[in-house]
Amino acid sequence: MTIKWEALLQVFGATMLTTLLVVTLFVLGIRALSSDKKVPAYASFAGCVAVVLYGLSLIVF
Image 1 (cartoon, rainbow, N blue to C red):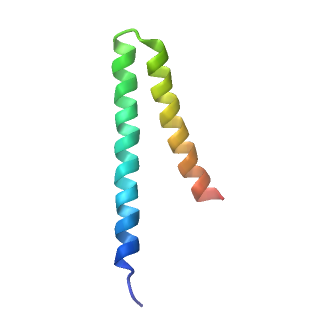
Image 2 (spheres, rainbow, N blue to C red; image 1 turned 135 degrees about the vertical axis):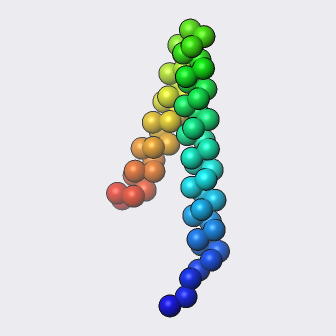
């Protein structure tokens, strides 16, 4: 049995980038809500939902 290190590093990198993206969008949404900017906040939260749903669709389908 061999380990494909390149594939493992690709998955690790994609996971880290996606996590960073979701956390950044969520923090931007929280900051926008705290300064009463509703539309950018909802757009940030919608981006979070879109990324999570895309990830779930990759797992299910």
